[in-house]
Image 1 (cartoon, rainbow, N blue to C red):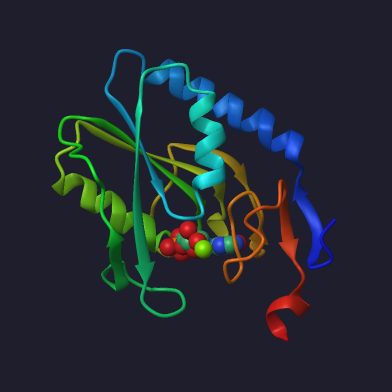
Image 2 (cartoon, protein in one colour; image 1 turned 60 degrees about the horizontal axis):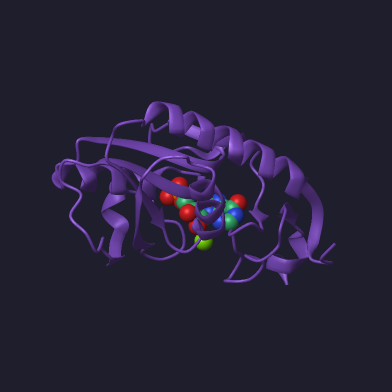
Length: 179
Ligand code: IMP
Ligand code: MG
């Protein structure tokens, strides 16, 4: 185990099973529809790569990158688009794929933006849900794991751009961000 990790919260095999299960539900729900998975960069990439390979439907993939002004935006107005979608999503059935739903600020902004883009439908799929920190009332339509209020990394999630490549989800040691 990486020495900066205090403990492993979710093992690689647990993630694999759960991602396949959620992908199975999406496959059932979206049969016959025009599915577009929109990954939010960069945290969603590992989850998205596994999720899409377990969805047994024709689909397309696009990406969006947003940033919060400063550390932890507090209102959706503090969020800015760094990279918008490449393709139009009007009339499409969009699922936003995100690493973690924390305060909900980023995702509520993105969901509002999709309304303007006139999608046929819009749902949210989050790998992790941290409901203890929610500031905006938003719940994921699909989520793999509900976690306590701890800072986690791995499987796409970073601290200062590091640890995204860890195959498991682990709690970062306090010493790493307190030094
Ligand atoms: P929200 O707008 O507060 O919901 O922020 C969501 C974003 O904050 C996520 O996409 C992550 O990039 C980041 N984030 C929130 N909690 C964690 C965590 O525990 N580990 C790593 N990144 C996190
Ligand atoms: Mg991040």
